[in-house]
Amino acid sequence: MFQFATPFGGARVTGTAKGTQGMEGLENTTVTAVDQLATLYARPSERVLRKEIDHVDAMGRAFIAASPFLILATGSSHGLDCSPKGDKPGFVQVEDDGRTLLIPDRRGNNRIDSIKNVVEDPRVALIFLVPGANETYRVSGRARVSVDPVLKRRFAVDGKEPTTVIVVAIEQAFQHCPKALVRSDLWKAGKGDRPKGVPTLGDFAAARTPGTDSSAYDADYARRMPSELY
Image 1 (cartoon, rainbow, N blue to C red):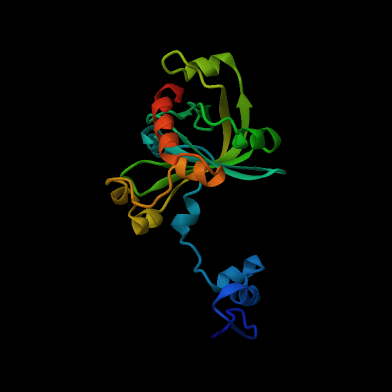
Image 2: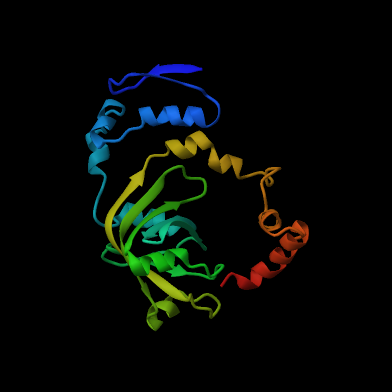
């Protein structure tokens, strides 16, 4: 059994740490109003509050130019999505005015969850990462999906154009503190061999479709992947 008081002056809660009984007990200590958060978190410093701007400045441009990887968050009536996007550093371009981002949509598995979301709801959020750097860079705004032939040619690799280009009108941009990556020690952890026990694509496929040979699946995917990147 566990026993604790709520942080908002509520009654003491008693519950069981195992199974659903424990989770039901937690409902009595759930934050349900934004103003309650002020009792839990300190006010951010003025420097943190002022770091948000409405465009990508010179520092943000330099970070994005060095970034080979981002995560794109989208949403619609069908649900939410976070999709990884990656290519050589500089694959995302910032227009001269610093208020527009261009993201080529390279070949994937054709679920196009994020693309479908953007068509319905233009609101997007992105976070850029640079291997070895613990800072990240955040951008949010409104996006559209373009098939403009000039834009597509601009992002061609070895003569292969992206199917579409995501054009983001920037509304908010700022750097994010490095604490999360410092705590996770992400870049150091990624320097060694693949961690044992982490499922592969083949393992996931075998779990969904009994009878699938996971090793054969992985080997076939590794063989095909170089010709399917662009």
